[in-house]
Image 1: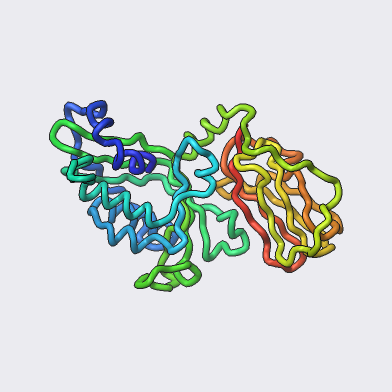
Image 2 (image 1 turned 60 degrees about the vertical axis):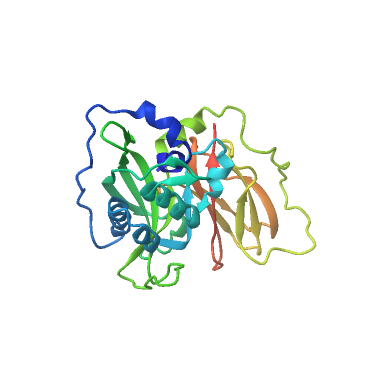
Length: 311
């Protein structure tokens, strides 16, 4: 998917370097489940193969976010919205013209291959495993054939795609709130490539964090909602976060990697209500990558936040 974001704007510069003397016009369609969580990915891939912008629009939730490879890791953490996704695929399918100049003509063919889908717990919604899933796609790639001599062919890479069941998804008008239908809510691009780049980011882990205190900071009012946020994004391997604790009850802080694996857990015994800064990764080896930090306290709704970790 990274190439999709780049090719629309820079195709005129990239295509000469992507010449293939014996281009292949299409990938064979990969047979993926037509029902269940993975059906959302197959629906996207088939719509891409058919150059069907409406089909892609139909499978993305209203709160869809694409977390793509950029030079700014903070931008990766926030992601881009569904409107940008639709604009990008339209440019890929139908070409791009700017002020009368053709930047990218309509291609002869486009295709996407999806292979090796694994179903995991969605760490953002660990209590709702029937409605939310995180899917690992071990080989996802695409191909765009411009003409008989030029082909853009991305190397297959690992992607993480969060899907949500239709009866709990935030939907656009016309989409069906059906428990048998699944939609794509988040897309994390090229996880291995991202982790490698984060591992090269030495000594640069976002803004300087606030000074850590052993006691909560004094506030005029206490938090009403349980919450957690990263003090820096990207964070260093210490993964310092700020908790918003409304009550005195015991609290639990969990760290999941992007695939849904629990990598660390900390328990806070009868903490003082208010804001507390802690090292969520203490006691574990936190490698560069994308993680979810989750805080639980009593029967309150858990707070969950995504954190990008650099070296």
